[in-house]
Length: 298
Image (cartoon, rainbow, N blue to C red; front, side, top):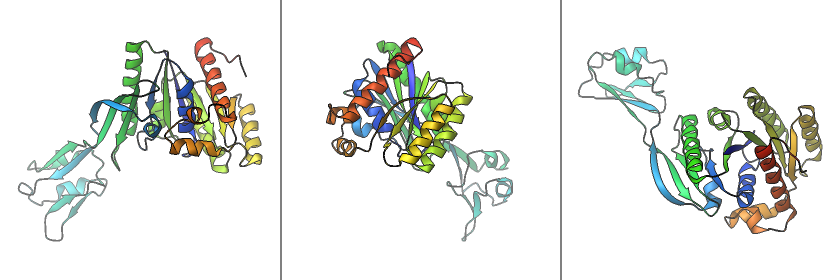
């Protein structure tokens, strides 16, 4: 079983559209949405949820007013300025400032502070028309997205082994944060989707540095390559200078928007379009690399 993660340096570059197109042509695969902070692949997959699991997030402290003596020791020790005096007297902890270090709980002389882990995050095992699908939903402002990505990837690989799937295909998050790092770790290859804008190129370069630090094979795909021809040329030059294979490209295509409105991949919506043909070729090349270690077709 081989695993590929599809990433982008910035949001809106088109990686979910590329992932959905690949899902339409890949066979015997398990799919996983690693963009747990803003999951959207399920909008196209329209999955039937089979299992729901709670993911316990960060620790959040609270004060028992009946036990608290208002000594202020916890406030003086809090490094995040999360503990405040109320106007009417007494102390309270602002949950949006609390970092869950639990130091206040340890220094309280009367045991008035307790901590509980957030239960506002969930991950799911589902069936879809493309195959098994593992995805998640984090509550607003929740933490530990990297750990949640690790959990959904673990489950996707487990399902792949149980079902004899050949591939796990991850729709990753944008950027270079914790969830992106968790999406890259241990994968067999990364497909980088780049938007030809100044920010798109800059953020893609940062992501290339991240992936290179893990020594993971990296391939590229340019989306909307005709919206800024000058930047597209710069991207092509950058990829060539860094020995990154460009597997394909899409021109601006309103069919992509129309397919999303219909909750379909572009392959399903317009099977004979140039966009679909390009998507098929990208997966053909990625599959060749995963199976034989090199790209033969182009």
